[in-house]
Length: 443
Ligand SMILES: [Zn+2]
Image 1 (cartoon, rainbow, N blue to C red):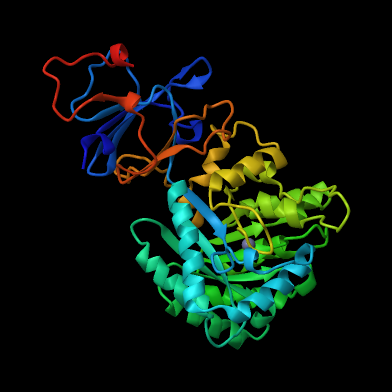
Image 2 (cartoon, helix red, strand yellow; image 1 turned 180 degrees about the horizontal axis):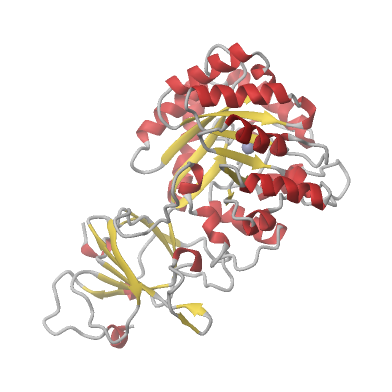
């Protein structure tokens, strides 16, 4: 491999504020540019760029201030349904029409069909720079996993080392009504290997507090983490998130829980919503917001312009220290005609829908924290010893981000895995220079 596709040093990288230590220097109100030193596919060290320092030995890139992010996390997708829309013909508008079209389409699902669609999704995610992807998978029967579950398990093994693929059993809440059935479902999910989680769809139209309790008891019994679709609606009476926080406390739940959507918080009176968030902040809960599908499916009435946004209270959650991730959700299926398995597309939508400030320095964190998908100590990416999985954005800048992020160079374990490194970045070859030249004269 050409040395320049696996740099030993990356100079003058613009890293986001959230990734840097609090004592990192600033210049003109911006974090100082960073030099990353790589070794054996991992980050060896990161330091503020020092123009007086001699050019290091080895293959070196000078990014001249280009934005750099760690490998991306897409915390909520549906690979089993992806790319089904083009073959469906006309789909009736709204959520119910989408569900109806899906139920018809899935009659024709085969292993080869699911594999082809999910593989295409993973390829797109890989090209986007995603290193960790969580997919939900619809379950309909209490006794055996669906075909797609086994296909996704096989794909998780095939993609290991490129994308960590987690699978959530998206089980209708009514299947947890009987405690014995809940335990049997959890046993099946737990037996299907690592990367499997228990899930459910929790909504005011199927509300059953006892079933939700059984779900968590079963997960606890089998040592499973949980990932729920919860309160994906604008009904202010939705109780899913508040009840989840209370149950975790009562059961002393030892695993980690993701609550996706939680749109109803935006429809509740402020005191009620904030009290729920106060309880969530005391729980092992990460919120995942899905701006694209929420904008499309909430407050959706045929022939009427939507008045509400359907985005959960992301700012109030972050202000309380609650981890919040932004993710893709449905892609080119009856629930959502657009999408590209590029988490930056979801963030760009969120920036507008939720009026997110400082998208690069603050909110890009919501695309990069895989440690927020498990319980345990915080683990920022790109720290010394961690894999050199990173993305360089050649055309974006810290003001317009995430605009112009389409072009990117993806490094995986220190090597270029996608995109083309600019010739202008190369400032040294693999042969050490006999008399080191200051980097500034080459920038
Ligand atoms: Zn979803």
